[in-house]
Image (tube, rainbow, N blue to C red):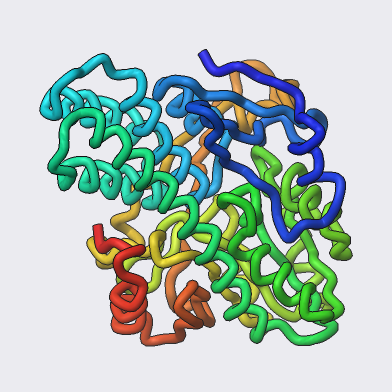
Length: 372
């Protein structure tokens, strides 16, 4: 079972001062350490994963969340599986890794980064010609590489997207696409961080993001740590502020982008996109190329995760609906590409027509990206 610990002084340094992000996922002496996002902002705890089952549970329970972050966590989950396996032969170890991969893939279906990272580590293992010991080292090395690439990709993405943000911009964002959703820098918040770092004056309107409140709990917390001015609003206030001319642009993240540019993101994103279109505001999606799924032609093929209805029936563990009430809880919705002004990636800003541009971006990002 995963264990918990309070932040050490070194770990607390990521929160005490603005550092351009946090270290969400860390491998240390054979242990995968995760910031427990389910506890933020009330408690700052580290979750220590020693077995692949610990990682699978952390992904499922939203202790770690955000498409890039869960992809990296899953990669390290395979490294843990390799360590805990008693297999002595290459073939036996590969079989153990396949079983661990099946467990990890089953945790959350919408974010393509998870399956992408798992498949990439498996390919690295299968391509390793050595014995079991060499294979274990290769699996961990690939997980480290995926971690490093995510950090670099988000910083490049942020720099590319910062050009879309003018001085004095008032930005609306939805859910959390910050350092907590990646290994440390962020996608949508990476753009905001980069613009802020350039000295641009910004103000961010943060949707609270029902039902799990990732905006109120996580995005507001990250922006406050960075000293970036913000206003927290409920999800149904976005249209009000747009209609009064108080929003200049929208930036959100993504969990999967189909070949035609349709984008899955946290539930409520589609509504924000439609409102932005109606009010003539640019709507930007920020995501690394590992989030692009060229195998899916359009957004209606993206699997939508259905989560526990108690997340809707309760707030922070306290029931708010009468007993017997039935709730639906789709975790994501799909925004049609006609509502998207541009998609910001680590290889640049992509504009319509999206399909050829997305294919070119994935090709340009190789070997970091995948078409599966």
